[in-house]
Length: 248
Image 1 (tube, rainbow, N blue to C red):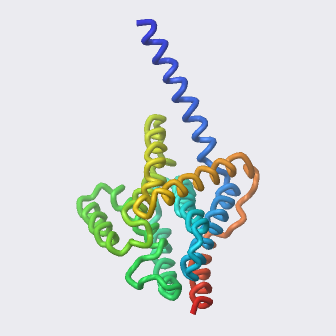
Image 2 (tube, rainbow, N blue to C red):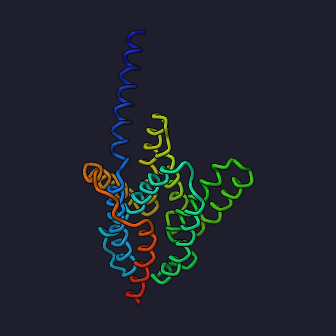
Image 3 (cartoon, helix red, strand yellow):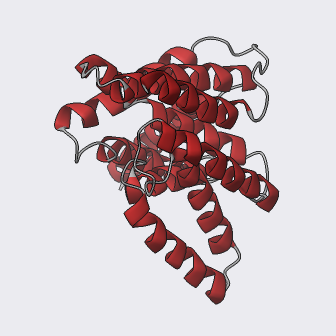
């Protein structure tokens, strides 16, 4: 009995230390969030340049696998500042998604494939509807995901929605066990985003994400926010338009 109690105490202590370390690793100041978004932007631009100009540089492609997971984690942390996802914020995402879709097509992507801003909008809308615990809205959420699936081939599909949902829930979890379970889910979901492409892409996405988060979590804690609120969707639409024009 004493041995069992000792082992239980040690396991609890290890879980507590792991949880504390993970929180210091995954919770960032406003300045750190903007650093992570900046890294993600650079990775995204490299990936798009490689794709749009058909450079076929493997290193640019692999580096780009880290962009979406980094954006997703920052998005999840930002949403945790509010008790619920606000519908006006979701509406802005829908609006930016529509604007960016024209630039997405100009950059050479199929017109029927939704850009990544739609992935964020769909995820946020589904999460909001599911929070209401209404049968009608739950059905609407399922329908929205079903509609998004065939249109999301270039935006990580259902795996992308799962990545966003796990990121959202991670920063709202109050129970230690739930947080640890969600981190384990992240370590599985991030490689799954690119597993259909190649094993190298799956590993690269995880490595770039962990490496960036690890480095940023050690620095910039006192740095204030330096990007305006709508900088990412604005930059996203503009850089696609510029690259699309240059590629003509």
